Length: 302
Picture 1 (cartoon, rainbow, N blue to C red):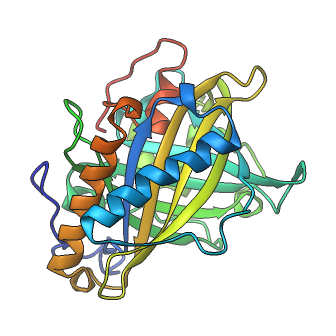
Picture 2: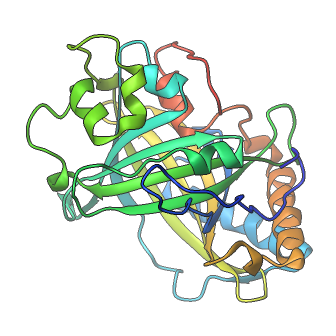
């Protein structure tokens, strides 16, 4: 897909080594990374909704905040794991654990997300991220739309091929061993250099996410999306790391994304950036910000 032009994400037919057909994209997720300095209160999070509403009006996108006026922010704890030399991330893999909190206590068990994120759609589709152990899991294949790296008002796409499962489904023995991870996800085996390679908490950073639902966006033709704003800050000193405005639509087949829907989505996405230009942070993702939080800057496919 050319940069600055959204297209229908159509995967060429093919199959994995066991004969299963390639996964297809079923989510369109658009993200604007924000500077965190103004996201200092619940009111500040809600105020961003005015920018979203203005962009929706101009783009001809439906906007409804009904029932969300008094909603409270959701809080999640997020951890990333990698080798000390960031071997996973430098090869377009991400290994993440997250858990939601409610009234100060975990709501359910932690969720593990293993993903391959790449700018090439076919490469992302052909990467088999399914766990080889017999565990409960689900696959989510997303087209993630981000601003251009160079300037506000454009769009580029990364394709995120994810496997998600509860932590309790992971083998109990030596979960941080690259040997074990290679057995669970054979696509990681080429990254293992020794029998003692391990993953650990990236930059010793534990992230606290505060996320607020703002509105439901209606792009027509049966495609709608919940829009939200989030602040990522470091657990401990609560220093702000990065913010994000995002919305995600789900569909069964790529052809459900009509040309008019794609056109409205792109127009709206660019307007949100330009109307809130002073808040936009270019050239990163939330994950990238965590990897660089101690001054480390790994090579990035994203």
